[in-house]
Image 1 (tube, rainbow, N blue to C red):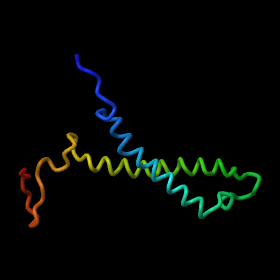
Image 2 (cartoon, one colour):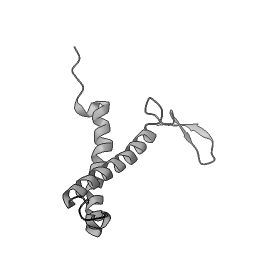
Image 3 (cartoon, rainbow, N blue to C red):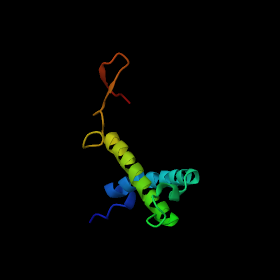
Length: 104
């Protein structure tokens, strides 16, 4: 009987650690930089319909996290290459532009 794979061995777990976690960390830094330069009330139209600062910080954080997650996911997908995860199927381009096989 096979044991269940560990969290890091599952595809979803790897995706979360390689895409969502770095995007989360960068969103924290980006939000700190963004809202240290701009007051959220500067973006609102009139004072009555404007969001509270906390709501603007929350929406801004999740928007930045989603943006950076999309960026990380695109990089992750491009790095995966083919369906087997090997982008160049064991070959490489040499200096003169010729395809050559990788040798250990």
